[in-house]
Image 1 (tube, rainbow, N blue to C red):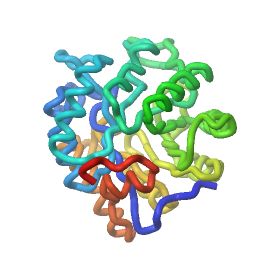
Image 2: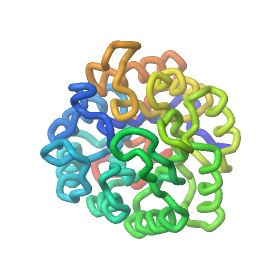
Image 3: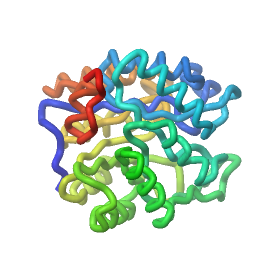
Image 4: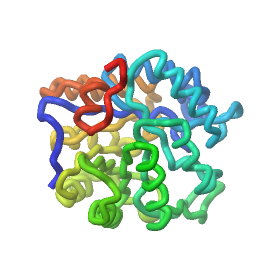
Length: 288
């Protein structure tokens, strides 16, 4: 059973950019470091505590370039104390070695994808998104060496087995942070339904804090459900480019503001980055 977070708090993560969404889909998607940092600061002011970071090169293509990640980090840190969580998912154009290079930029957290999926559409159709057990072990080893907390991303019930294995092998330390991601359009990913979310939450290991990420139209509804069940929530243009049916979101901060407003209606105040660090077992910043 998950341990949850304080009942009057919620940790909000904003995933601003991602590997797939771009300005051709929604002009508000931030791609360059200055855009990403400016958007992150807007989200911080609306109640986000964690920013999930993907990097793009000058042409808007997914990149693993460490200096670009460092540039993004530096620009965010100049503005606020958001928890910086880098993505090791990268993009379909990046190798395993490239995907993990972001750790050299020194994030506080990083995504740890807990299983493999198959791409079923687009130019990379038929190319596996590989996260085999030995690859997972290598990633978590590198995170541990650098003092980076894994954000364990699970896309199906089966991937919870890898979470349990890492815990049993003492490869991760409590509080375990598990991000339940539903609705990805990959073979092997489970749909974004209330039934799947409830089932996966019930099967979380003892000592886990969970986050709900729903891709597409279910972002807000399952996010609210996750909060009611005692979890954290992720919103942002990486996962959903719309505010409502047929209405593109004007910004990442608009999505954060909505979920923060609903959280307060539920009696849950968005945790500050400093509060989130304490809840998640992260070291405080010198400015905290």
